Image 1 (cartoon, rainbow over the protein chains, first blue to last red):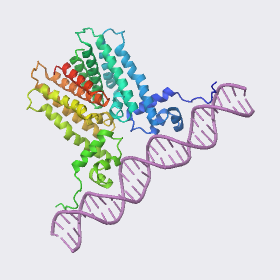
Image 2: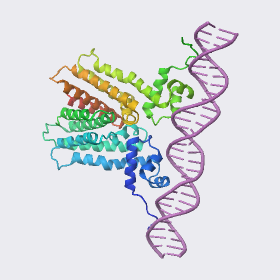
Image 3: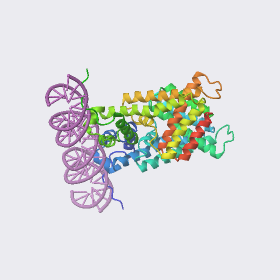
Length: 199
Length: 199
DNA sequence: TGTGTTTTTGACTGATTGGTTCCCAACCCT
DNA sequence: AGGGTTGGGAACCAATCAGTCAAAAACACA
């Protein structure tokens, strides 16, 4: 017994993706509601009706980022279609490099950005960040397990190596935001992988 | 021929340090002028007279951070009083860990935070970040040169290893902000150093 | 066509933002 | 003591902030 009424004139996911772009490039405090309205192409009231307040919208955008970017990355790391886990890790790092080489995309990782400037101010954001970081670490863990040359790594080592790789991954994305040249970024990425015995 | 007049009633460096604390914990957009006034214990007019506008004050605070934190870190890395460069690097990483273990300091690195959320919006901040990051890399470079076991690293490798270590350093500070436990952070740090053959 | 329900829209609100201005106080130098 | 110069402080500013609301509009169902 649901009475249907006037339907939404905009696609929620499209609007969310637009909001994500804005938050991604300008940060939470840096974006005003008007910025969002312009990007999402909806009116003020519609935004509040559909997404609640700004904070809530930010959280939704973060979830959207998880869906768009984190999950694919994790899936790449876990994906068995490429048997060598090292290859999967190399491919993940390669995507970062290509983003800056090809498109000069300097926005970095929205998760990383959020962790840096919002996680400590909002418990919900904090939780979401921790969970997504955990997913990434798990991804690295799975990839490390599928190394061609397993060289006797016990559980403990595997786990810390996974966290360490995630740290390197985040660090690299900070490096991107710091304005280093694509070639420096590539060299650094390859060096890191080499140190981890993955190249 | 300078005519002196009424002297300042506050210490500029003290005020700058207070401002730095606020910016560090709340971020640029997250801090209002009133926050700064309260922390710096000065009146509105005094702030603008002494430091110019908010953006300028932020830049000054960044320079202050360089003086307080970056320079000592770089000096530690370059310092010849400890002959083994590996030991110096280990000590630097240890300071991060102790900050979170002892004081639960989750503010991370102000330079890193700034690079993430401000560098792309202001060319001056961008330049300052790049320069400071460069100093850090140079520090790592010097330390790597003074390794006990130099194992034939040519110039190119040394430089990329330095950048790679700086990336790991930044990544670790993002990890701190993501809320990981001190023990996880310690394990990850040690694992990273191990992978680099520094432990 | 009418009724009920939901969305859209834009005007509106009160609070807060960063920044300015102006007057008086405080100080140095002669 | 007095002139010149600067800092201090509060009132003040326009602009922007996030968020609300009521009326109009668009649909489903009868």
